[in-house]
Length: 350
Image (cartoon, rainbow, N blue to C red; front, side, top):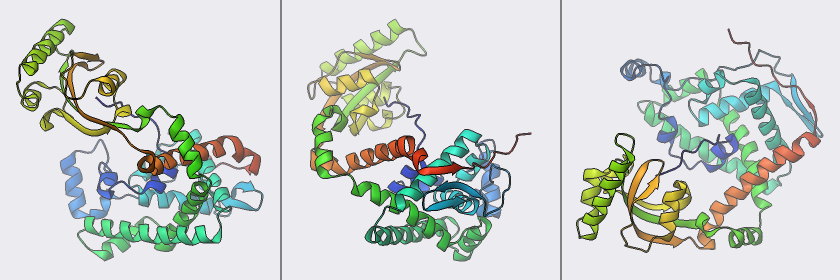
């Protein structure tokens, strides 16, 4: 059973990975309180309805207002607004989230964007050229995906840009800046540092396993009843009954029931502690005794388990270290480099 991840994904991660499928990013962009049928009807009449623009959460200010001042440059309200509009283009639906932003969240966006400005200024010419190339490729990829979702009409995509008050040049410029900061940070992480990090880490961090399990929940029955049913399943499995068939019949885990109880090639750290421990320690192919977690009782069988070698784990580890270094820069260095903050003020609710 997988843990719930409550961490807020920073915009740096959203933009730097660009690995999520666009169709996944836009899923659920509609209003949560709008009936699905009504939403679909509205989108049929106007396909752009599923891609609203940004409603700024702060009081209107002069575009040339300096939001942050640092040695060698400034961040203006115009630049910051263009950044927010670009983010909404890259992550549809963000604009709606921004409408409810409080002052703390707004200041976080200002600080993180200012941090990227400062880091981008450290990138050399080669990095900037590569950053721009990546930005143009990303825009073209998003354009293709958007057009596919807009009835394959390029003119509708052009209208989307107009309604969101953005254009290709703006998006490419903003992403070039962000990509430059990322490329600079990445250049500061050597393979030697990554190897040291890999060698010192708990190897569970790099362990994947394929685990078949049957969950018997204790939510709708007593703990004793759940345990007894799990014990009975252990006996049946040890007597040779088919694990996948029993999982499809009895398991109460919707995430794996239809696949015969199988979670395949999953990093063990995504699971709750008790399930993780069993996935790490059970002999391969052996039927476990019931393993109790907050979800109930699990009958488990580890089908395979392996530790990802350094060369395969290196780039994923690099992204982790990059994010940590960025967070450290924002927390420890940013305020020493910025001479003045002038945060926009969130609109008063009501």
